[in-house]
Image 1 (cartoon, one colour):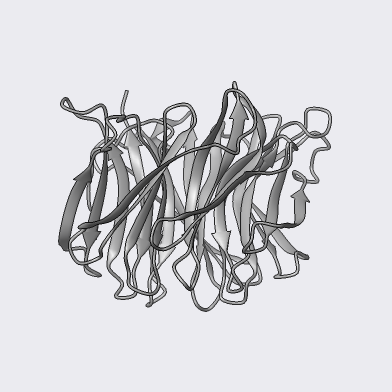
Image 2 (image 1 turned 120 degrees about the vertical axis):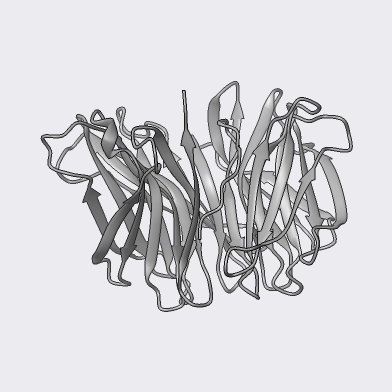
Amino acid sequence: STGAYNVTNDESNLEVRVDSNDNIIVLHKIVGVTYASKIALHSRDPDGNDNWEKLYSDTSGDEAYNTNGLAIDPTNDNITVLTDYGAQAFQAFQVNASAGALQWDEHWAMVNAGTTGFATRWKGLVSDSSGNLYGGGKGDVGGFQLGPSWVKISSSGVDLGFKRTHFDNINAQNIAIDSNGNFHIVGWNEYADVNKKYGTYNKYNSSGVFQYARRVQGTALSASSHCQFYGICIDDDDNVILAGETYYSGNRFARVTKFNSSGTHQWTNDTQATAATESFLTFRYTAVAADSDGNIFATGEKHSAASARNGVPIAKYSPSGTLEYCNQFRHTTNVGVAALGQAITTDSNKQPILIGQYRYG
């Protein structure tokens, strides 16, 4: 089934999760006349029928939301949203699964930032088995990437710690959590080596203590190639799967990379959109998910100079990295509009569920 929403084209994320009953929870941001912005949550049943939809506005009066994280509490299916707003502040609120009724709403200043003008742009939110929440994002001052930031929040909305780690010029993009409560933040080093970007992820234990970092170079086809990771997931065996792109001299490949639970590289698969004779402006994966069998699903963005080939890709890889298919969704009446797949998950039947947007103008 397919559902349609009006969304904003800004730094906010679209997110999708499924709860223990396979209800589909969609998060997005909308801009209206009365408020500068509101957060929208939409619950659908496993067949795509509406359960409820709610809009939430900031009680503090600051409406400049960025909807940057969505998590489901495994103990009760409560839904938590993480947002950033203003120069140095962030918010989380939680609603129940049955009707979207507010359970708690908390705001915090980034008091531990330690740098004038510091801000964190949250990029993701995950929950551990006890309902504790971990947000991950990128810290920056005036647009300079300072490294990953994380926050830990209890299931009742108590701030358990905020930290910015490693001034290593990492542009952090998302977060995932393993079965032991370790969390992993993915992104890339900004020009770490003579104008070359490396894909990277950092591992932290449940207390936020740094464990190790892993770095991935671009394709071996070019010494000056870049690698950027946008998406991360962890499968049932605690393997870490990263999704993004590698590119050089106009050649672009969507990339999936897998590490085992100890951080040992297992494989990398680079998928080219089409023959090299066609000018593709973008082909990248922005989100990735794994089912209970370890199969991997990725979505993202593919568009070219031949606009009729624009679309949202969805690809499936086996646990060993074999590409099984790479299909594409296009707008039903205007195949030339730009499209972006932004989030993907799987349900208990191993079916992928993705959310994205078409962009006009």
